[in-house]
Length: 322
Image 1 (spheres, rainbow, N blue to C red):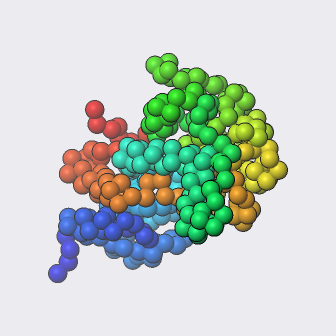
Image 2 (image 1 turned 90 degrees about the vertical axis):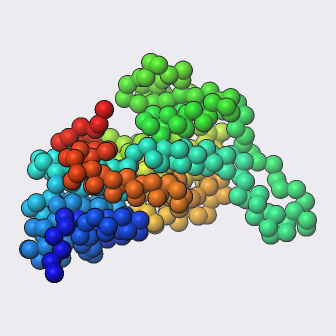
Image 3 (image 1 turned 30 degrees about the horizontal axis):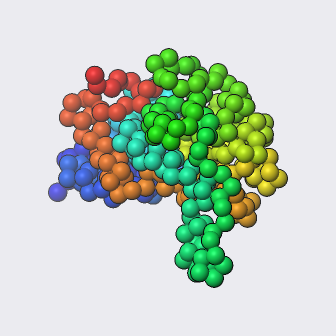
């Protein structure tokens, strides 16, 4: 008996909760990733929604003539050709806000780990070196008295700033335009901020303007007491410049949760002792990933029930509620 429910395509891997919830209301069609979807013409015509945890380019969009909505699992949606989707009247949604706190918490934890070397200290204990060799060496850096600059003060950047306030550090930020209601120092350029702070936290999205903006000039401006933290996109970092700066003492230390070509991490980082590395885990808790999965599904449900998704991206043909 044919399934008369609305067909929703899921290309490649995605959170299992998305599958579970979608299957209760929709005909879920799972396909492998590739240059083009391997579905027959009848199936392609039936697809009206997509739930995706990665890229969805123009070729994929054009393969489904009756597509109405693309729900992305994640805040960043640079892998989706949103302009092409919008030109065809297709709505694109993402999952903002539900992961703000988790990513901001991770940024602070990564900063503390980088400054105070807590993971190394735990290894020192676990390896029995405390008993055999004595106290763990003093950490070369401290949070005390730091001047922190945030590159990108969107939703997550603002949460990071608010978490920094109790540490009694001086906080600054760089964005395209100042936000006058905030009590933080504004810097019109990234270089000016790097020259004025000793700690730089990057939380910018992947755009043409952010490509490798963290370069040798910026790292040199931070200086040998400087610390760089990235919880945004690896796209924004010149890896060769950062590895060199960490290796020759131009920069004091770094903490990275994201990389240019994940999951491939440049070998140069692995030999350095003054860099803290995480495998892109900022939002990787069960509660947060479940909330992201729910928002993906809820966007699809709301679109087909009311013609109004919960969290459309700015470039999409409809506006958010409220």
